[in-house]
Image (tube, rainbow, N blue to C red):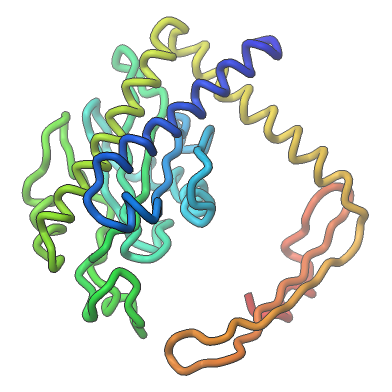
Length: 271
């Protein structure tokens, strides 16, 4: 691809994420999604590597980028499938953030995935609200290990019921999950409209070119930072469980355009 083709291709993939977000917001029931806009949408390649995202919630997209490769490698996929997960130990954030992942197949070839993550109003916590003061993960609500919510475009009702019945408002949860399903379906459709005329090989080459370009931009930006150690610390007012003035500190080493996270100074500060 030349520079113009790459720019158009990149914009179309990014626009897919924007449209997924628009569908999710318009179809959702809960205030968290519809009004607070606490959701994120992204496109990944066939290995689960992040390729495009909309301007949604950074903490969602940051964790999804690292989690997807393990998640997609550990599941069996077919056209029309969708997997649901919220387990923080498998790349989630907190339990109210529920992620739906859908594969994209072009003529029986897996060419990528779309995913969206939405903050639900209730996930079955011991206390009301979507962000309870919890001392353990179990108190925060239902833990969803990766499982199929849809198989070949059909809802797995046992999975859906296990999620909705754990909440105080099953109808709202059902509606919000339906909105997430719709957002992924919109993403799959748009990517097929883009990839179909190109063919799988050229589409995948385009995704690789986009990520290569992003890597060059990042390397250029890091190269502008002088070598040295950079440190910062601040205080968090409280943790909601009695702790106050909690110190947060970070220390990194920049050397020859790279950020060294293994620098010994980093280990001296709590993250």
